[in-house]
Amino acid sequence: MAEMLQLDFMRRALLAAVLVGMVAPVIGTFLVQRRLALLGDGIGHVALTGVALGFLTSTSPVATAAIVSALGAVLIELVRVRARTSGDIALALLFYGGIAGGVLLIGLAPGTTTATLTSYLFGSVSTVSSGDIVMVAVLAALVLGTVGYFGRELFVLCQDEEVARAHGLPVRLLSLIVAVTAALTVVLSMRVVGVLLVSALMVVPVAAAQQLSRSFRITLALAVAIGVASALGGLSTAYYADVAPGAAIVLLTLAVFTAAVAVGYLVRGVRGSARRTRGGEGAPDPGTMPQTEQGGVAP
Image (cartoon, rainbow, N blue to C red):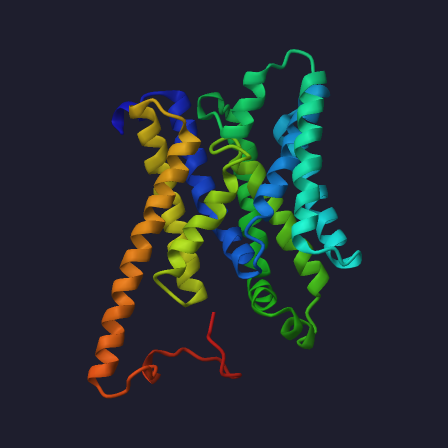
């Protein structure tokens, strides 16, 4: 680790990895709860169009990717609600249109090569600049601030839209907030893991945390811890083993998920045996059921 910290580009890469590992599982928790786990993939393809547009106009690829991704996220939400198009069809439209637009525009942009496209598809931490770090930090603060401000409302929305409407919450606005924050998360993550792999860092840590806890807050905290540890561990592995950092991060996250599944299975087995020993086979332990005033599981 000390050897990596002596290199400027690795210090920038590690800082970016921490921010990505922290933010991606936060918004990913809400996406998983809403059964929109693949939304990050769709937005990632749209982000590629934004990156190409940045090169074509000689502006910041990250900034243009943020704008185009946010607009694409709003569009998919409007299509899903207004046109009553199912979520998978709307995501397919993003997949096809985003990747086609990105490839077309990157070919028209002067001074770009296939390597340029690859660095954004799969990540390239060695090219993370100080300007990229500033942009990533700003986007991370914006995403975390938004989630922190609307946290309770987003929790209710992700549990049940009908309940959210019954409580008078602006469901459409909250849905757009989730979509836009997901888009910004994709953009801030693409320099580390790439637009094709960013969805894994948004979803897999959450899936791993769900194997260990049923509480929303604990799941969120565990997912962030897994995301940060996987990002740092994968980046360190990539440095010493000379492999692609994005792939190393995702594979390490999948390994954590596999371990979490095994641990969760063992824990549930032990709890089940303890309940049967007490003579209440299959009955829940009333002392471990957090409840709200309505009797639901607390966040």
